[in-house]
Length: 84
Image 1 (tube, one colour):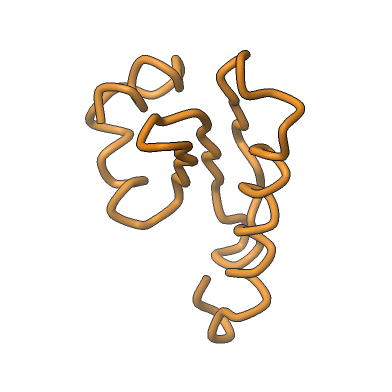
Image 2 (spheres, rainbow, N blue to C red):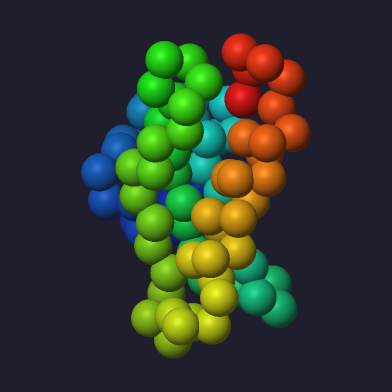
């Protein structure tokens, strides 16, 4: 939670907690270290809109961001209609 708050930089804890509960924040880890964050919003309650994608500089260009985006796509493809 603290890492998400510090990394996101736009949402406070009161706004971030519901996003975490709704699984609208994805976190990437490498060897137990948090290295990336993807936060999305749902437009029209179904279409994901990527609000933020951040990867720790030392882990950029290693496929972290791509893996986060792929996870959102897979969740979207496997979602129950009207429920992402």
